[in-house]
Image 1: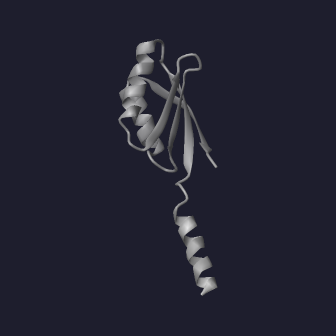
Image 2 (image 1 turned 60 degrees about the vertical axis):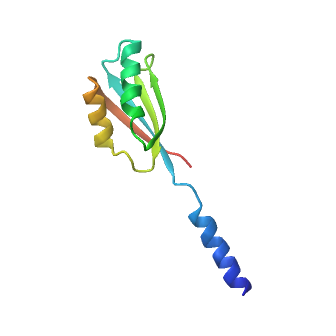
Length: 96
């Protein structure tokens, strides 16, 4: 009985672990002003799987805190293109 309780406790704690997150950093060509930053923030702000958005005009980069695999990189690239910019280098960091 004790083993069953421990097994149940272990499985329950495993299921309650939050999904792993990732940080996607994209260098963006074409950002020149605060309106560019606002445009990108609004575009990515509509996506439910993105929990944090940081757009830096100074570094010309976007940092997105996302679920482990959503949105896909192609969707991120296309969103940047749709906003009128060109995605350059993409870096993915898995958060632990």
